[in-house]
Structure formats: C-alpha cells, structure tokens
Image (cartoon, rainbow, N blue to C red):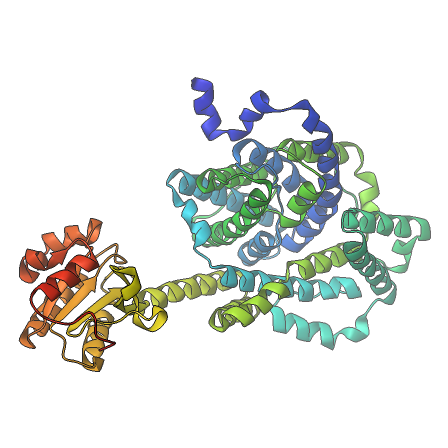
Amino acid sequence: MELRKIETWVPGLRLARTYQLEWFRSDLVAGLSVAAVALPIGIAYAQLAGFPPVVGIYSSILPAVAYAFFGSSRQLIVNPDAAACAIVAATVAPLAAGDAGRYLDLSIALAFLTGLLCIAGGIGGLGVIADFLSRPILTGYLNGIALSIIVGQLGTLLGFEVASGGFFRTLATVVSRLSETHFLTFIVGLLLFVLLRVLRHLYPKMPAPLIAAALGICMVYALGLERYGVAVVGAVPAGFPAPHIPSIGVSELWPLIVGACGIVLVSFCSMMTTARGFAAKNGYAIDVNQDMIALGVSDLASGFSRGFVVSGADSRTAVADSAGGKTQVTALIAAATMAAVLIFLTVPLAYLPTAALAAILISSALDLFDVVSLRRYYNVSQPEFWLSVVATLGVMTVGVLPGVLIAVGLAVLKLLRMASRPHDVVLGLVREKGDVYSAVEEEAGKTIPGLIIYRFESSLLFFNADHFKDRVRAIIKDANTRPRWFLFNAESVPVLDLTGADALEELHAELASQGIVLAVARSNGRFRMMLDRSGVTEKIGREHLFPTVHAGAEAFLAQGFGNPKSGNS
C-alpha cells in the first residue's frame, strides 16, 4: 500500500513493476536517437540563453531523468526549450549587466524559483493553467519567439556579434553591418543550414543536428578554419559540475519572480500541448497537475546541476516517438548517453563552429514557426487569427518577457469578451417531436403566441448582467405579438452571483409593470441556491419555477394563452 502511495507522486517507479523486456530494444534505439538530437540542440540553446555550451548539456541530463520519474507522459522529453531560453535571457541579462558569475547565479536562482512555483501549483491543482492560453495566442507567442531567434542569430551566422535589442532594432543593425560579413564563416553556416533543411525534409528520422555539428567539427579540424577567423565553441570542461548555491540580492528577487511566472505559464502550456498530443496518439491520458509537479522537479534538477530552466521539448519528443520509444526508459537512456559524452567526449566539441550553432537555432526556429496553424485560424476564425498575429507582434516589438504579459492580457480579454457577450437564443416548439424545444432560427422551432422562451448560454454574473437585461428588452420589443410570459431557460446558466440575482429581480419588476410574467425553467445547482438565498425565488413566486421548459410552456397554455398549432408568432 505504501509503495502505491509513493507511485502516485512518482509515477515512473511503476515501471519497475510493469516494464516488459521486449520494450527495451525500442527504448534503447529511441534513447540513442534522442541523445543524438538533444546534444547539439542543448549546446545551441545554451548559446541562445547566454551560457557557455556545456551548460546546455547540464540542462539536458538530470531534468530528463527527473521527468521520467515524476511525469505522466511516456514519450515526453524535458530539455532546453526555445521559449524558456528566450525568457531566461530576457530576465537575467539586464540584472547581470555582463557579469558571467552573476549571470550564472541569477539563472540558477531563476530555475529554482520556477521549479518551486511549478511544484506549488501542481500540489494546489493549478495544472488547469495548461488551458489558459488559447492555441492561437500560444501559437502567436511562439511564432514571435521563432522570428526573434532567427534575427538574433543572423549576426553569428554572418560572422560578427550583434547586441540584443529587440527584433526590429537587431534586424536594422544586422542590415547596416552587412559589409562586415566574414564570408568563410557565412559559407560554413549556410552549408550546414542547407544540410539541416535537406535532411529535415528528405530524411526526417536522421539526427540532422548531430550530423551538422559533426560535419562542422570535421571542417574546422581538417581545414584549420579557426586560423582563418571562423569562431569556434572552444574548450568544453568534462564531467559534472559541483552544486552551486546562488547568491542574489533582495532587489533582484522580484524581477526573477516575474520571469519565473512567465516561464511557468508559457513553458507549461507549451509542454502540455506536446504531451497531450503524443498521449492521444499512443492511447493514454495525461495528469496535468502531476506534470506541473514534474516540470518543477525537472527545473530544480537543472538548477542543482548548474543548468537553466527547461520545458517539454517537442522536437526531441517527436524523435522519441518516431524512433519507437515505448516508455520513460527512452529518456533515461538519452540522459545516460549524454552523460557519457560529457565525461569522455568533450574534446571534439571545442572545434564546433559557432556558425553551426546559429544554423541549428535558425533551423529549429523555422520548425517552431507554425504557418499551418495560422492558415487554419485565418480560414476558420479570423478574430483568433488576429489575436495570434497581435501576440507575435507583441514579442517582436516589446520583447519576450513583456510579450508574456501581452499574451496573458489577450487571453483575459478574450475570456471577458466571450463571457460578457455570450450566445443566446429564443426557443420554439418542434411540433413533430412533441415536447422538444429548439432555436427558432436554426431548426424551425415554432414560437407559442404570447410566450417567449429564452436561453442564455453563460453564467449570469456582474460583467454580463446588464447585457442580459438589454437582450431581454430587445427580444420583447422585437416580438411579433405582445408577450404575456417570459420563460427563462436557465439550463445553461451554471452560476448566478449577487449582481445577476439583482438583475433578475429588477427584470421581474420591470416586466410585471408591463403585465408580463417572468418564469424560470431548469434552475439547478449554484444558480438555484443563489436564487433562493437572494430572495428572488420569493419575488418571482415558486409557482413560476419549473423543472423543464415543457412544464413551463404547459403551465402557460393551461391559463388559456397561446395556440401551439399556430405558425411563428
């Protein structure tokens, strides 16, 4: 029993009881494939986040192990991620002011803060934030990051350094300095970029980043390109680092907390999109709260090993799945392989050209940019398409971290807009179905003369109560015959607050002054509870509360009003 309790918190331990040996070959091949892709991408993302290359390797090992034990996805690989790296750089760089030691301390502290927030959120049941950013808004945000990464790497690809200053400023700087292009560096980077794109499209199962990195190392070593000004990564220390306790000032704590909140929101939402997609493909479910805890533990593991914050890596997860990975053992094998490289094979990494890392990052960013979804949003829902575009422009204009606030603001505005102006409908009787009522304009439902049956498809709360009253007035005004009853179908109104209850009471008085009876059908749950507590039930009269719409219509007809056999009123 105790073991089962532990397994609810550490789902990966269940593998010890349920793992089947015939899965191991698939997991082994998948794990080696993931390592082949994750190693060069981790090094490239370290550069994106402003770290030495080895930090990207540190961030690819223990976090993957932590998620394998604590996460609920069998395929998900937790590693450095473009969005998280961009937010790390945007948060830490202004505080570090060019001091590498401060940069390390602040990034470790950021990883710890992010991890603690995720763990607290998961325990508190806040995994629901995975549904907070709509798909169009998240797509727009990630598209903005993709474009920012591409522009940010152009300088490295061309052979000169460009200070980060936002998308448009960086782009303008690159264009103004094109005459400084180091052509040999550009040729190396361009060749490797073309190789990456060709392999990506023609041989998608091949570890293209590893092949590009290996080729770049061979070119530098064999041709002595470093002597001709081609920049390389330089010496990479072997072995694991000693844990480091960061030192941060009180004034630095708030900016780090803000950055951590942004990372939690964006990284977790993005990670859950990936995890749910592969879970659905392989026929199992994801526990969002457990995965939030797992992401937190992964971030803590990364900080413990002097790494930076991580997230669900969609490219490496796709490799794990396409290579046939069955379980979390895939991630453990990938981590063990990268650990072996870190211990025994760091010497060749010194010859890796930085232009190769730029090519890998630009290629990854192109894959991150989601044109297919944008086209779908435009065809299906243009308002959501423009929300996505605004999120993209937010990242490109004000930066990655403020872009999080724009994305959150857009999500809140969308929720308020939908909730404050919900769909509503006038119902009519479908004759051939007896006691079935449907929308008059949709299914040829016939209104009963003198009776308006109205359905409001949202909770009735403070921000839509006035809209509700306005809609009732408009419907009564537009009625072809003078209504005697207004039957409010409350089946789609799960919650009623005090402002909503007051609106119903005011509406009752207003309709009564016009000789119109306000009746309510299907009042249940929290709606009915507030109706009773607020005294609105007594004002309307319990005789005007009905269990079904049909019962309300029958009560109206029993008083000698209306003729259900007539046409639309």
